[in-house]
Image (cartoon, rainbow, N blue to C red; front, top):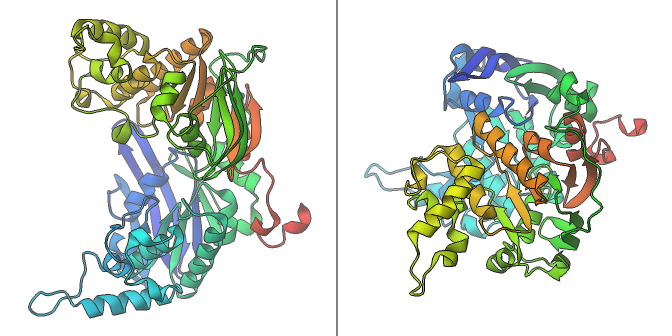
Length: 506
């Protein structure tokens, strides 16, 4: 088969961090190549180079057609997070930034609709052209994004976690559409954490680990455990992790009990958390762990089931009520819902307990508030020039520490920390882990909801969710390989997800 894309000895560094180290791979025309690896393996950096968003420090990338060299513009990418304009129609989104125009510069709207209808018809969605994107189903929105990219004539289509937000049925239909695009000669590079998916969609796989391409192989010769081993490496797969020795399971009664909790992407989950226990909750994108955290912290109601705190029902769907009942939490994204940028570090760290510092005239005593903040700053090692410094001026790590400090300001009975070290450097991570360990040692119940394996090292046990249900529970010490296998479904696979010929071996 003629080559479609050739990556030759590509390296890329960001300061002292080597994101990619002499990565080479070749993808043939019409081939579907899976690109997999753990968080931080270098996938995003390689994607940005393939699409021309960044340039390699060394090495080269060639996109080839009919034997002629092409550029990064010949690669189209459909990103995990939607880039569509909700209020615009499917046709308008497909033609965005390249509207056909008349000699007078006016948009030729009939041509916009005709081109979009032709593209959508190839995906069996011709009738969507005039529909606003905000009215479309998740699969339909994904198809619109793919059509917009294909309308630009790329020879290589890069799909970044394309099934994110799709249920099983929608994912299956998307796979069928992708296969038909391949039949039309489109080359696919498929990025996913869902290892079972790649056996359905892809011919071959390249595994990145610590910025290096450690494996390229035909998928007919691989199994899910083979891919897990390649992703984590032999040493990490077998070595026990953790910052401390394992502790005996607490005999104290649970402080938090969730029974049969059902919500969008959560199906009848049971969970218990004891005082002095740190529990990890993890899974792949869409597994339901983030949605369960939203239920436990009052951000969304449950459709069924109960959650009790010290034997009393939590007011699910009521954030303020859950905080007052004894739940402290950090949101998934500190930038959008974690803090108010222009407020001071003291104000942000104490937002949920402001009435404590009010005098008889309901005016806030800045002196009392700043003194309280100073204690929190010491516990979390927040680096700021003073209590009055605007939070937006801090480093990412210290902004995260301010958000974490607020979660404990009200002396909660249970802490729910969602991605507690997201976007922070190694030094800040270690500081956060040290504080979490100290809180646990003092009897605080902590639930860490995360997609970062490093966050799980401070946990006594890890609860793994797959397709909205608890699929495994691992007690410390556990290994990176055990976690990687568990999030894929405990190492077992559904027969219809296996490459052909593997059913009989199960």
